[in-house]
Image (cartoon, rainbow, N blue to C red; front, side, top):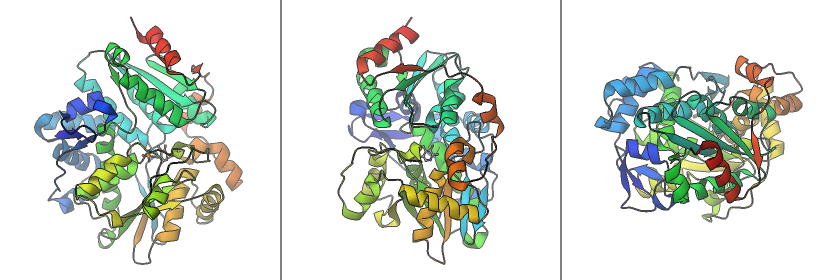
Length: 428
Ligand SMILES: *Cc1c(COP(=O)(O)O)cnc(C)c1O
């Protein structure tokens, strides 16, 4: 697989190099130079999740990795199901929250950890990542205990739910967590600055594990196939995906799945009040506003860093922009959507509900709507209980970490402080 830096065209790398580097020169994103469609879609849709995903990843990565290696990476990463649940009428939820940290980021995080553990061949690596919630937990659990890999996770202090925070700040060992006095964009800026700092990048063998890492996107492509595979045959070419979006990795993966030949009709990009993309799709103007805090805090992003990849898919002729519409949902309608789902007998949390809302507004009668269930409702228990007025019980992974103390350090948003911390904690 060959990938090209979207900012520096001469910067071309293999899959292994792209996984290792995360970002390219001038902080450019890597993107596949060739996204050939697969010619055996019906056959693929008849396969079980793991076997099908192995075939998809082999097609994408090519002969750079042996088939046996890809088989074992996927086997280890995808050890939980992604059921498609009929919520009402022609609307389904693809539940992506049955992994160890109860959110879709387990798919990408676990595949990325498997790839990196293999590619690094025992050399020291530091994963530096910013999280607005679920990435941190997924990355922490995926890498926990891999001895040559240290993980540093930055998160906006006080801006993620307490339980969510407990999922990744209580592990210790090779997992180091830092609460930053600032918002998610401030955390992302710190990560970008560190990658620009040669002393840190080379001295600590930095690698990024947030949604910019290409391995995460490839893993996420696989569950769009899993969704279509679970629909009755006659509905498989009618699906509209509503993707609750923040950094737009999930939507990028969905569009890649369509590029590979999966018969997805169109997409709805659902956001919360951080609506840079829905506004852009309306008026063609890219005008990010300051990030605002919402109930769906994993989507509190006003400058989505995967957007250039979606632009590239459109520019290179892989995807027709008219098949993408936007929908921004405010706090009031997020709650309305959660209550409508409750009335239909389905308990959901704010992120997935925003996807559902996009379908309620835009789905046609002869279409089948699938919204992505990006997190388990118990991950946002306080909010869900407040809005729905009913108790939510905790699944086991949350029970396990709820009683443990947080091991996170605290810091301001200045880069020099982070740099000193990293050398002190990780430098030898
Ligand atoms: C990360 C996250 C999102 C947003 O996904 P992107 O790929 O960044 O657009 C949505 N919902 C939940 C629960 C998340 O954790």
